[in-house]
Length: 348
Ligand code: TYM
Image 1 (cartoon, rainbow, N blue to C red):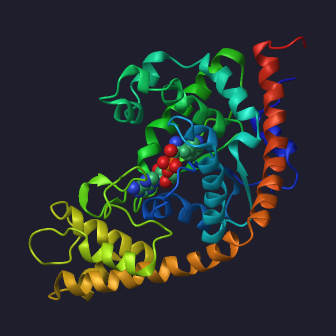
Image 2 (image 1 turned 45 degrees about the vertical axis):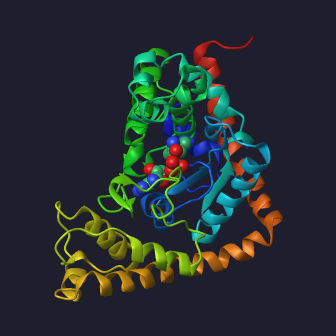
């Protein structure tokens, strides 16, 4: 009998409430998590925890697309888990685990390579950006096949929704295409996931250049606010943030820098754009930026306080990840059994 994907979901992990839609999302442990990661992703994961069944993954295999020292990778993994927990991911309501602790991700990725086309991967904007100007020897095959692993991450868990920032949209669309193609070729096996990209905060821009998104890989010192920046650094970076010509605090397409700052202010304070514009009417950028700095510090400060406790207790974080991996593995192993069968792999 061909089990429907939703039946598979309901029987794989009884600790999760079966009636809810499943959310899956991931983040790379590449260090320097910033305000864009928080507003575009983590904050939404935290806020939606009660609404969905949640699976959150620290995608360490994806980080191998660039050379990284093993010690650094391990530290970053525990560091990112600590940030997620400090930001409010609750292991009682969400599965939190490390990708490489569940071998099925790498295994499914190989199988999905069989239903992915070279041209599709070659068209991925992130691949084009990250490989641009580099010699062939400097571009790893991991960078090229990266979106296939991402598709495996997502569809392994019969995911309904993938909450991400705007930059991941193309990868989620490819995951949909891969799931549909697999289902068409081998029979209904995977739920086809949908991206969950919010209208606000899905693309936080660099503070020093509103034409570029805030990014972990940016070497420019005032481009991003890191979640672990100290209070003085946050204040200084916001003070130095570029603004637009004309002094008004107004959200408008011709005011990309100020619009980005208003978006950050609004998301972190809960105030509407209209309230913010009215509050600073006739007051100029100085007052606005000074208050924005306090809004950011007020939001990040409590996360940093919890983070300090977690940094002091990495064994506690490891225990949460080990438990998360066990729960994730139960779902992933059942799904891989179906995939192997469908594809005729193994001795049977
Ligand atoms: P990563 O680690 O680069 O980013 C993690 C999340 O942060 C979002 N984000 C932003 N949101 C708003 N403004 C920004 N400036 C900004 N910068 C980053 C990203 O959109 C993302 O949601 N390939 C993924 C990791 C991944 C994944 C997955 C995600 C691997 N497997 C499965 C979802 C599902 C990545 O590199 O994200």
